[in-house]
Amino acid sequence: MLKKTSLHTLLLLMAAMLVTQAHAQVGGRGTYDFLNIAVAPRVAALGGNALPVNDNDIQLTTFNPALINPAISSQLSLAYVDYYADLGFSSVQYGRTIGEAGTFVAGLQYFNYGKFDYADEAGNRDNTFGAADYALSLGWGRQLDSSFSIGANAKLIGSQYENYNSFGIAVDVAGTYLSKTGWLFSLTARNIGSELKSYLPGEASAMPFSMQIGVSKRLDHVPFRVILIYDHLQKWDLTYDDPIDLKGRIDPITGVRSELKGVEKFGDQLMRHFIIGGEFYIGKGLALRGSYNYKRRQEMQIPDKLAMIGFAWGVGLKISRFQINYARSTFHVVGSPNYISISTQLDQFKR
Image (cartoon, rainbow, N blue to C red; front, top):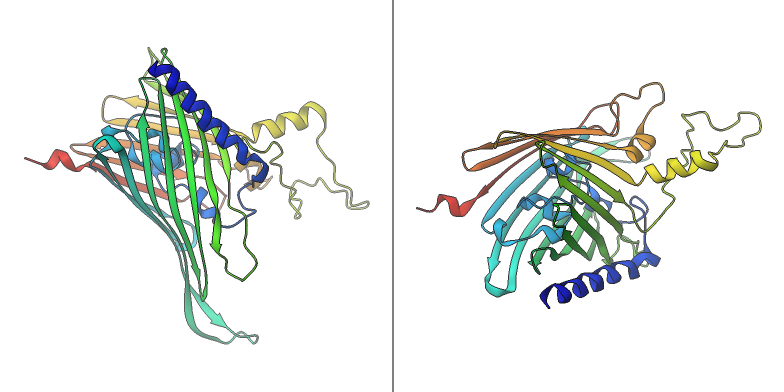
């Protein structure tokens, strides 16, 4: 009876996610797109998205709240990203189980874009101003039975750019299913909400809504976990027409752009949804990670300098009571941001 009830609950959750498809937006075309930036090194190393990995890592719950479970109670995590141009991103998370209510995760993400100079039309500079985004979240998760789990994040979002500010609210919902053979399936819908106060009156923007479905499996006879994520389930065509035309697809005489057709077009559009990643475990205290994001590579590459754009890698190290993670994710040939975090279970320090 419990399994039947759990299945019905998960199906209802999935149906609620799909209802929002009609209002879906691709990241970068609305406000608060910083919510899709990974701060946790492990998330960044494995593609920067909702990971279908349930091994009691509190940092994964920011993107996938269905991973919240009693094992992360009393877990504290701090993360920092040394981004481009001295930008600094940080986050803090703490988990706690409260009786029959379930397990909760409180978190704060802060994106600091530094100081900027005021300048007039003549280029005269006088004083400076700042810019920052932040998100305060409260997540909840519950294990329905040995196979199904659900979770949700509620987020209060804010932006402050000079004298312009904006506030909004959003929720993430997610469900996971663990098969008897060890395959973990996950479905998430992120950033369902609205802007309460826009930067300019009457100019509210759409939220960066997205849906992901993912699957992972730790192999039985090899210390390796394979991860596959299908991003932007709500929208098929994710192609971006670059007006700079670095790939030379616009005829210089006619101005007509050469488009992909047939199987080649289908394959390109399909691959833009997939993120492939994996973790290799060396003993109990060391993990090596890596991923490939085809969409990122197609959008950010410079044709004559492909480099490692679209690839990411990282390492996880367990030292005594502390879990330390580090990652680098290549967005552009100019360099790769550095991600670092430290996590611990505070209850372990009690005598």
